Length: 205
Image (cartoon, rainbow, N blue to C red):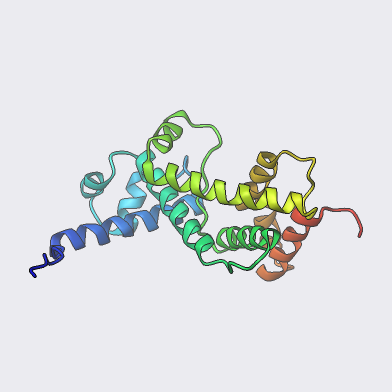
């Protein structure tokens, strides 16, 4: 029986893929450090060590760069969710996911995007990797939220979508940076404090 061998990826293709990955990682870091509005294409090219013309061969605009970075983030999130303990409860999975996003933020690897930017939004909604990843992550988190509400571990009177957006907001919570900048607490302490306020509230127990 004759079987067809898997086509070997050419060296050029491998190099282009490696360069694209380097660009995305650079954009991810610069977006976390400076935000979308302040980041420039020139900075990305310089950070990667390539000419701006070469960068444009991979991504046509600044908005496309940001969309690719967000798609990369969604792929990371999917991989994290895939690795969660299957036997963990819904609330444990939610807490673990929020903790992961906060640690990403504290380490300077969470992209910061403006809440209002029509050109960026247009690039995001047509990026298949980002949209598919966002839908998958949101569906899984939504399912866990509903399970936790049914078990009484989350307030069942709150709409699940409101809870979902509240959890997403922890990924860009300025409280994390304020506490980190104070120098009074370790990252572990900050994560514990914000997780507590997020899931248990501020009222004395």
